[in-house]
Length: 259
Length: 106
Length: 153
Image (cartoon, rainbow over all chains, first blue to last red; front, top):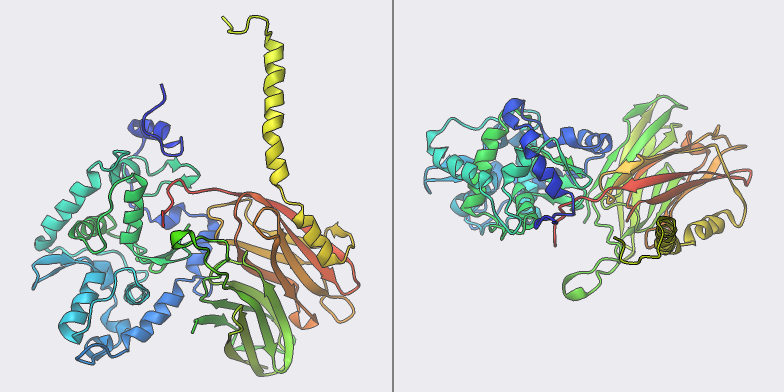
């Protein structure tokens, strides 16, 4: 009898092989770039060939642009990003005192806009937000992911881990089914990676543009035929908080390049 | 206005062959894709690239939709004299985007 | 027991082979003739000989949206003997044309790199036009792997 669950015909036999696959706990965390072709790796490594740099350059301009009723720029408070933002993206998501919740970089930028610039929040996946997160992330490039030892983040991390291992969608798959149990396997023609979060926002050849980690997770959720969470949903921030602990030590690659 | 990223060595010896790179932020919309409601997204590409060194055109390219988004080009030049290297990208609409770089020749 | 008693194993095998041949036909019919026509238009009907051109691109690519390639043509790039143009054509995209590069002795070296789109696994050809009016080429086969999980827009 044919298996009831099929994803391009290859997933079913692959997933049945789960018992012989290796979990991440048996090795070091490995960035998605390690699974990419030499051509894709070269594109990421060379700033004159990496199209993600366009977003970084746009972000640099936005950093200096006065916004909102307060007519303040990011730089008016934070000064030169090369100093003030160095290592910041490596430590996000962080805990926000005022809301009492975990907040990712996108959320932090929008909190800055509403609280300090008195400006409207930017759309999550819009060009401006991607440019700002790419620019801030770029200031940490090469630094190890360093999730903070803040106990107030524990509930979000626990929720994120629970979501990571929870089966969902019509294919009834969890993130962990692919990215923990089968990360050395292949799905169709593509290698299955560990699903690490150290290169976002990143330039995806499939997207022909830059996108956030949440866009990637939404695509995964649609892939397993689940209803994706909304952009900025607490569930996504919780997943990001868990993924950051999982990526601890991997160098920030923003803006990464992936197929 | 689209952004450009160009890479030209600042200095070169006379007669030296240098590698030049040019990239422009552009969707290179093929005209083959369907948008919302099944309507075709109209073609919008950079169809011509020209590189001028001093007053001489030293490299040019005609491009079709099969060139990737954010088109990337790398080619060579023979350094002859100090001057300005000009890069221009022409879109289907006729809009032209220009970037320049100075080169010092010793 | 076979549902059709008179059918022998050999007949079944032959039938299967014929079925394969029939299945193969549409694929061949789908290969457009335009790549060769596009090359002929570029060479103004002249023969493009194999050689002197090196088309470097990975035989297997992860995503057809951006396939990096480099074309290198053997030439002294002097006014008496140089590469005038390099053209790239493909076999199975909606259009055969990819790009035409215009070079001169000022280029110093006949070497270009770019990134192209390939809709599916197919052939790509690089053709160089020399200053003496001859044409040289190299053809490469590329397998474009498709991601299992792609984003639905």
